[in-house]
Amino acid sequence: MTAQPSSSESDPIAMGWMQGFPPPEEKRIAQPYADFWSFPKIRWSVCHLRELLPTRNVSRGTGTARALVFEPDATLSTLSVVANDTSAKPIEGPLLDVIATQYTDGLIVLHKGIVKLEYYSGCLTPERPHATMSMTKSVVGLLAEIFIAEGLLDDRRPVTDWVPELASSAFAGATLRQVLDMTTGTAFDETYTDPKADIWIYANASDAMPKPANYKGPVGFLEFLLSLKRKEAEHGERFKYGTINTDVLGWVLSRATDQSVADLISARLWKPMGAERDAYVKNDALGIVHAGGGLNAGMRDLARLGQLLLDGGKVAERQTIPAAATKAILEGRSNAVATTDESTSFWPGYRSMWWYGGTDDRPLIAARGVYGQTIYLDPVAEVVIVRLASDPVPSSRFIDPKVQPIYGAIADRYMSADD
Image (cartoon, rainbow, N blue to C red; front, top):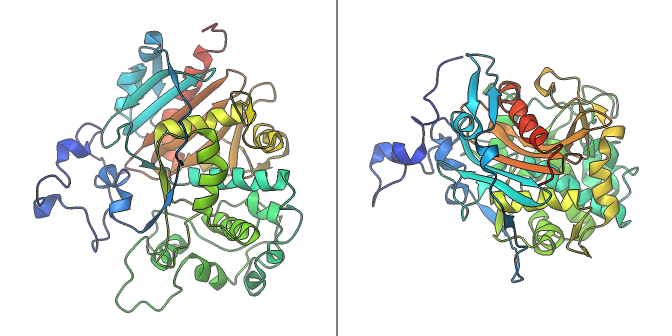
């Protein structure tokens, strides 16, 4: 793997991206140039996607934000941790020193709902949303579990019951549960490092990347989904991670409720949980939300979302989402499908678009996204960790060995703590 500039060398402020009026040409990150996902530019882009792509707002409403209690834990800041880089010598040292080497834009740790550590770097501030990438999938999976708990959705039914157009696609015959657990057999190659992979055709269709001048392919997320005709397995036969499943789920949710996924996140999660900042979701040129990876949100609100799950869907004593929906996520490990993928060695189970690891006695649950995004839940330790990042490498296969042991060390710190 080619050596990349270090975390400090690639800091977007130090590099001067988009600074000045106007910025010098060599410091610009803007359309119609399609390199804003490239490293090190991505370290600026993850906090500025609204300036690069069409988006739809996720309103927090006008209510009072759920207050966070801050009790910084000095011993956590200096906790000895190790980042086990598979391509270099492991880095060992105090927590804040080590995460600073790992392209971390933000880290927040909650124990029993109290903020023990909050760290910002690079492009990120408490006021600025950050791209969550595929953590979006877990948010949409939670929405689905809310509607299943309320009886609006039945996960045993085929997705064509809500979206009959899919009957002409490779999703024909797939149930909602198979979509939720990513066990559909639809062929789709999501290899980010392969420029010819389906994921980049998908990006062109959805306007995440500029279309070539002679482009004649599908336009928008939904037309792309309908263009998928080939199956490589029977539905339910095996797990294969694919963003397309979440975009099908988003289409089902919108058809079932007659609302955009952005409005559903606002109405069912952001407003009732007391978010402090609006979020936003990337959408295509037709206004369809990218349910598979488009959410941009503040780090504190992502921590609130994790805590909402640990609290069984309650804010104070008010039940804001069905307890059955949070139970489906928190106890999903027992029904999770095996991921059987070398890139998910830390997370061998998957259900409802959440990842599962740990043991029966101490289950671990996560929302994960490329370039290092994580919501990490340890219900036994009563710990929520959110990390937002802009790693040079998208794949969790390379990132997990560096950061998962750090999350575990943080949670272990509180296993026997009274504070």
